[in-house]
Length: 145
Image (cartoon, rainbow, N blue to C red; front, top):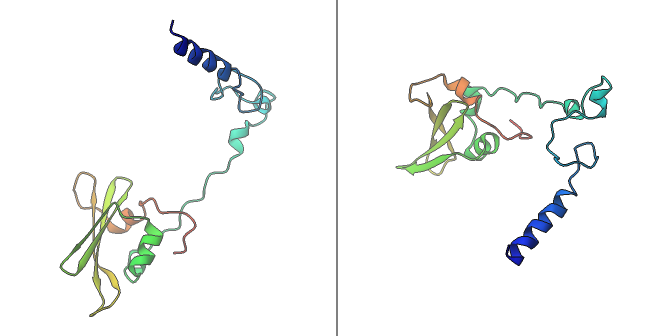
């Protein structure tokens, strides 16, 4: 065996000995699915104490129609597609199983762009409910709506 390969294998073995289990005990596999001491005693495992995130608040399609572009992006996240075309701006957001296209036009000359038209379709291309697709977008948490 070559010396460099031997050194790598030796270091790998030494590092593997430093692995601990999720409850802090030495072990061979830190990703082991064996329950911690609380589960063995009839209590809950440590991982089950993590609370699930509350659902995101529902967005109303009529409300977002009045939002300026920066508020849209702040609440919906970065669009997966963006295009400017003849004064319009198209922002595309992906939801769970759907695509939401927002068409923004400026409010008068030099005005802020606002949504003028919305289209929603399933991943397969068939039209779907716009409000439902809006609420299936993976919005960032902690944004004010």
